[in-house]
Image 1 (cartoon, chains in turn orange, green):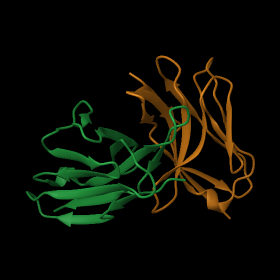
Image 2: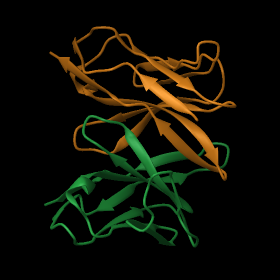
Image 3: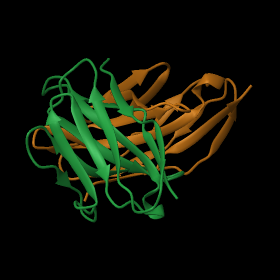
Length: 114
Length: 117
């Protein structure tokens, strides 16, 4: 079945450092790919998405490119801030009766120190 | 964006009792909602897909008689954990689909932490 594998955390960086969180997937067909973020005490929020190969999703300085040849969707940010501290989840969608059934990676906890 | 609420945000109950968790879409109608379970430091595990007006579809390994799901209206789905035991303690999260078929997005509730004593 479909699955998502993320780099294990926790990840701790200093402010203004470069961030990469790796994500690879296994899927049949052509899934859409997502990054969700969960801030402390809050629900998951969609950070960015890409729906087809070579698409680049971007939001709040974060970027990820849908790479079909390497089945990857790595999350990057050039200069992180303390406010980026959160848990990040990579996910893919598996169409189910027209709805969007998500399969999540295990999550990566990111801590940014000032 | 669309807002999804959950109630309660946390609950403590005794072993053997039942607990009901509500999931509401506040500013949109959702024909499909999803229920997830999140263990500490682990990912979200889809438990079931809740369809308005019909039976829920459970994932493999999820006991449908233990986790009762009711989606009685387009804005409300409920998850009832029946005869709860300590191993049912977890963080339960719901989500709802919103948008057109070309651009549906899932919006998540803030979660409900269940502790069974």
